[in-house]
Length: 158
Image (cartoon, rainbow, N blue to C red; front, side):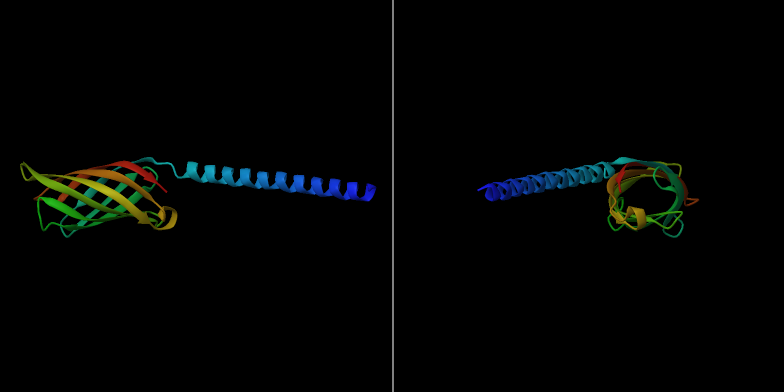
């Protein structure tokens, strides 16, 4: 009887240890999930761009969370003044952000064109491989010089 009592006590202690250990693992997994959630918060994505639209849309700029970058866009102007297309923003280290956009252009006089785009981030490469978010580009273009400037305002998660 004493042997049975010792075996049962040992078994109960072992089961209690196993349950305690599994709850620590569960808590650890929950903490890791919370860390991942915190890392995926949206942060401001703001900057300035110098544009050249002589042969396509190209630009250079500086923005939060990316630093110096280049920009290239492929626009479909079939339904001008409505414009749709894609944007690639490339950081100095080569990491890229991909986005789609839609917007419109408006003549404002003196050979100036105001262009506004809503952009949706669809991914990227490097540290931006899982990026998502939204940003607006508001640009002023001199149609004679084919140059202009723009602001970039939005949020990004990566």
